[in-house]
Length: 464
Image (cartoon, rainbow, N blue to C red; front, side, top):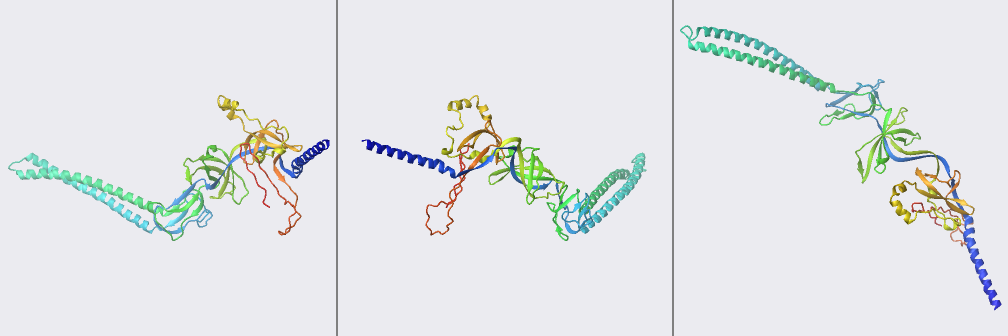
């Protein structure tokens, strides 16, 4: 019996030794092949931004058109004496182009002739009025003499009536003469207006710059005929001042609530390393929808004294939402990684969560205060052969780094971002038909554990 008992005891000891060896192999031998990617808690500035894309636009653009139709005869000269073309610098009143004016010169000549004819009509009407007034005086005298004689043997009744009719007719003719003068004067005013119109149209054949600026687009050539009908044809596009530029940025409706006038902005343009600064001028209220995506146009004002900004270039804009200085920060990846349970230090408890009763209380009177409490997160540091969590309060983020604070958070502590599993390398055999004697190919595994919000992602190791 003692022999059997000894054998049973020996088997138990061997089984325990085997189990212990297996446990040691799983927790120590495998762990020896694990290295961690680390970073340090650093102190610095944090800047949260909203990114968007826009187009560089001149602050004020004037579209110079033609109000009359005709053929372009020639272009004017710019400030330096060169023919008007793209990028020409012009002053206010500079001749940009000349439209054929022969037809409009004829219209002016015809209007001048009509005006002279109308003025002559006034003179004639005035002369006729003088003549009519003289006839009225003669008729009035004859009528007065006839009234003294009266119908008698010296003056027949028919003659008496004739003198009276002659006087009434002469008086009426004077009124007609006065009306003729008024009519002739109106004809003069009409002819004068036609002359002004003809001269104005003649002046429109000379296209002049309304402002001091730069020609950024020339849309006609010499010999081309422009037709002005319902819409004035566009001939030149002038930028009033290229030292002041705007960036028109399309901002998604989800971010537009964080944009306001005067907000600092930085932006870059393609094929340039320069960083330009500006500020929000206004947010346009006329939203646009493209494929069910609503965007608002934001005008960003910027200085272009250097002349490096050219119109209509694409700008990558960053709106400054918030900024903090001298804060502790770590990468967001450190807050998303959680180690396997067998590497967590013994006795470590998770971040305590409020009990159900406390949650109900917070839903009541303390709900508003609970909403103001900053979110919490957990990152991991090494503690001997194991890992220990550090619970921290989370602040603002710039998309890569996250502000952290708390009693356990210290500047310079090493934070784990993930793990790298380095296994035994192969012997270099590349023959696919050679026998494989338990060789393991080198792999690198990066694990990203469960985040504080409950979501998790992982990167699988490369396939052998």
